[in-house]
Image 1 (tube, rainbow, N blue to C red):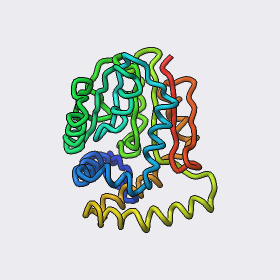
Image 2: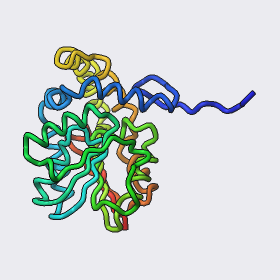
Image 3: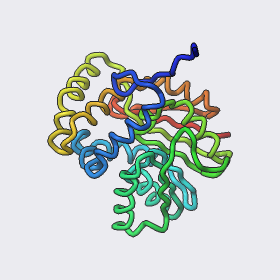
Image 4: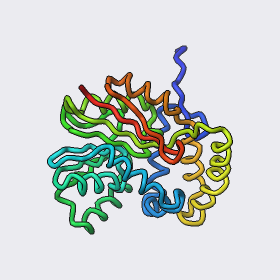
Length: 250
């Protein structure tokens, strides 16, 4: 008889075995893939576009850089990166094939297919060699990873010396009253929007709950540093509803 206890993690507010989380997350994004971009616009009233532009402003892509966009889904960040860089290459990696299919459609429509690769894979075990990429981004994806620290460790591994990490993620508002107001909106409105627009209340209920389980800005900054990144900093967006974390492999 084994005395080993199976490791658990959170899936929204539910505690589940670590071995189950990836499959559940994959199910969520398979369900919402075709309506994912529309729901982003509706949920954030379009503000997610400003956050992603702020990400590019801080990142300042340069011509010829190689980007790895993890949990890149439909390619939103990669498209922005390539347009800012002028020329370069982006590899979009996502756990969910359905999200990548939607991204490929967008790339073909924008005549950008030659500058993009689409890879199904796990952020905690990247299928790439050490020191391969100039830039690593993950946008609204790391909170869905079973063990975020392992994803950050992998980011450090695949980046070249001098490479840049940039994480855009929902975070915590450092004002209790404003956080309560935002929670009221998140828990009461967003799942209803998911039901109306994507015919999927449960997936958006999970997404809201996953935000509340994600570490605050300072805690996550410590995780970035633990992975080996230097000159690590963060910037709050929209009072802390979202945050950008940056670090360098030196």
